[in-house]
Length: 131
Image (cartoon, rainbow, N blue to C red; front, side, top):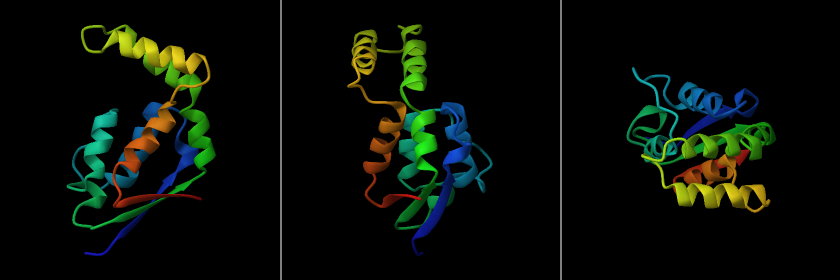
């Protein structure tokens, strides 16, 4: 099979839930199930074994309105995401989460958007193009 081109509508991304709704709309439309709201699930998807990537050696993801997504998954969203993890010490490394939250508050931390781009970057057969 040939490479596939997929388009994310960044203006649909208004937060983490909306990001995964957009990922599911684009990547999982032909599947009888949907991805959960998880960076690990996104990483698994990008390996290309199911969804719109299945059977394709590579993919280009056209990410329209990337700046909208960057803003929606920015500092405020990331802060709330990290703070929610602090409420679940049985599941998460509280020291690591606290360090991430402190870095974010000091202006040097990674936002959820940054982390999403890192997940995409870990898959060299999936190229993200801002549009």
